[in-house]
Length: 456
Image (cartoon, rainbow, N blue to C red; front, side):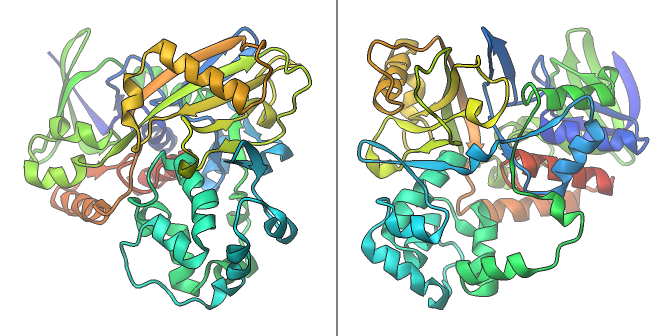
């Protein structure tokens, strides 16, 4: 049996755990990261095949926190930030039989066929509508109340599908989209709030949060790879099974098995970054009923396919991608255009698409479809939605299934957040992190990892 002491143990070698470990290592802390899988990076994974560079998990992030830009500055030149081309500002929404540009200005807002004439006029009154009184108001209800049903159906619904693969009728605004919630409750209006926020002076650090879409040069997997090299691979243990945390009077003990045998680590601080569903086995000393407030978090399943063509035959795809409202009753949640956003994702005359199918919380049964059935759905979208001729077929199709992809911040989130605080207060030295709180995006994970390192 191995037995050793270290300053801090982190459970999980995803983006949160690696970011925290990176910053802690820079502070001179001795850390150990334990990972159940045989690889680092969690959901992030990049593939290079036949001239295509594609992701099996997240495709992009947004520089919504300064910590993202700061992390890339620290990792350079080992890992270079790549921001999306101007085309990425162009977002598409499916309606009827084709994609339409989501308007970003007054003229586009007036002329777009996405929204009803009634709602186009009605939006002028948005700054004067009273605040909502339901603290658990869903994203769908808030959007319909302040913007109108057509804005809910053709702007907010597809956005929620694209970010959460979720149902806007079940996601609670203050938890799922807290910035939107705060605009209304702080300023009384989305429009007034956006204007006020734009006028607020920003520090040089605040300006780092440009909101630009980002990836890493040569693919997102370069981020965890660079973090791991900086941490030191000797400080990261993979293929760790039966990880179990136990509190002690002076030290926490972490027991686990490894291909090399059974081990016990002793530490003053331990950070978990695993999914909610993994916590009961990890934390057996916590009352199961209490832990149920966290572990009952619902995760949306996702099926993602990378689809590539070496020659588009003149078709143009100059946009971030297109999302599909649920009211359109399609098999596709959305199609992103990574090769329009970033260099080197496809051969020079070609294109790369990321197709998100069915799945989500609304249609989990898609996870049971065969590869052949999923390929048929992909080809229908390829011809009907991307408008490739019937005789044209993709040069690349790679399908990835994620049974627990995106956490759903619904009404139970408030209880979950309070329970996390109570457990951390009851057990000093234990931090419960990961996507169970603080947001679901890559920028949220980077910020959380940075924040954890700053207090340890």
